[in-house]
Length: 102
Image 1 (cartoon, one colour):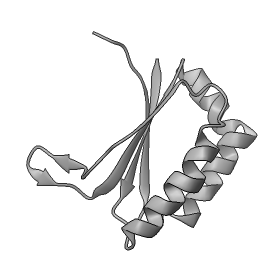
Image 2 (tube, rainbow, N blue to C red; image 1 turned 180 degrees about the vertical axis):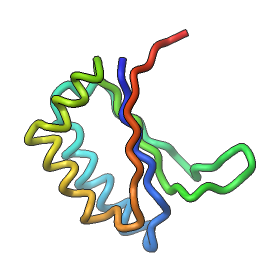
Image 3 (tube, rainbow, N blue to C red; image 1 turned 90 degrees about the vertical axis):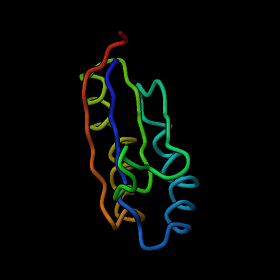
């Protein structure tokens, strides 16, 4: 498996972020070819020491790194990426990596 993790920084307007994210971004992302699983954080995103700069964490699972590359280059992936400017003005960090169960 391979993962794409999106860490969204705390927005100025959390309600506007959440409304856009769950009504527009999620439906766009769920159309991305090769997506196997889509998870999001619930409640505050924190560190073991306390607060973090993040509002929401999303974990998207794919079969492989090649599948992530194909997904991001697909029309659906491009549309999902283009939508970031509409709600993630505070910033988002994207991480991709292979993973395995232990």
